[in-house]
Image (cartoon, rainbow over all chains, first blue to last red; front, side, top):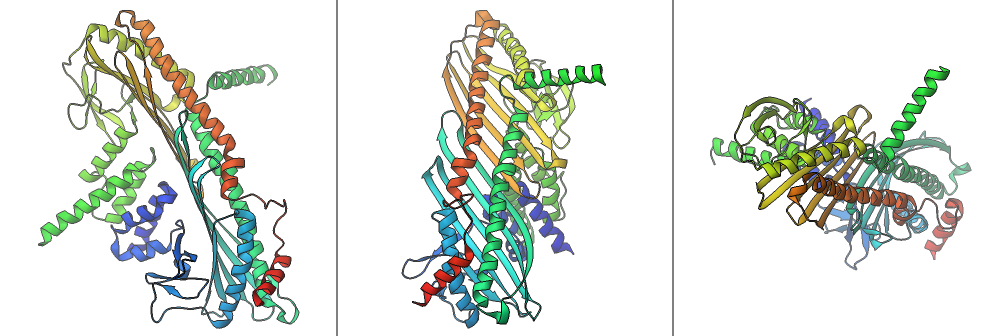
Length: 275
Length: 284
């Protein structure tokens, strides 16, 4: 299928470009394949945008609360700009959504000490439902960062076997960027990254489905916490750390190359002597 | 708009996108990106002029190294023509294949030359080669020295680069520094890039500029060359040490500012407790 190949090529290219520029890069590529632009946009993880309702209260804008060019606020359950005939969660799901937002806000406070969170739910045709738990955090002129942004996109698909088993499948993506405050020694230092992980777990619902809403929120929340923490640790130690290794094996620090060569020579001698 | 005009406009639009994408591609991956761009656009191959032009710009901006008699850096400084790069020392112009990064041909050319400046250039080259062996990844590194003008009024251009390209393990990086100096002033631009994309995608882009007063004495070429390269070395080492400090601060300061590894309590969130408490609050 021709369109599939072109999309794959676009995604290949996007992986080679800075992840936080993904919107601009995707737009550039989409202009080459205008017929498949929508499809491409749905496959990418980009930094989350923030919208406002009529009172100035903020909410996160994403693919999961979008209808056309409008976005639904988790606070008011209305679309901005207003539209007729839009998609809304069912009444039961909206109740769950309100509770989830209250709890997720506490998670946001504990781990992010700032930023904005939003949970959006939607019904699915197979009788299950899905939800997106989102966080956007900005840092400006603080702790050595000139400006930085963090976006977490947690999408959880929830299914039941019709009896008491519930299966939660989570896909979490983190997109982040940091511009360190400029200084004479290092100049302008910009580092961006994105990483995704999936996990699936199943649980037995409490007897008689008591407090099922709370049960869902606890299970989803625990998954979100686990996967986000994992990704944060990976990005920090493995991925960002790797960029340091790359630089230092391209341009060695003073004496390091000599030290490495000496060590290699000694190892060679040792091998010769002791086999 | 008739069909031909439409086609031309579309090509222009494509050209802009191609240029932008290839320009932002990390060095070592341009050929792959161009292949994918051809697949996307369709009916175009990597030898098309817009692809070759984008690749040429990419190579020049990244000080691409190409194989010839010895590893040389591609540079547009002192270029006389597109695709022909000047090798001042050997009085040659060199034609290269941008895709393979190989020399296609060389031809002799007469270039203005000043014996005093030649001496300084040769001394600088010697010092640079020493610098490269001591502090750079030998597999892919190189430097160039060229000048314009004469003994009374000159500008020297120096380029230093090293690359790490390991596509099977999904990473690559570049160190690209360009310098110019006159009798009294040394200026430099440094670009450091790194890209790691096994599963995720992380990119570092770091730029810095330098400026120092110097005093070049042409009568002592060897001493002057040592001093200049010593200054460059010192500034680049200082930059690298700065990067080291920065990376050391990464986990505790920068990352923590984004998201804590754990709440300030030191324990994970108690979902059970919070769920019951917060939802009960809602009802009030």
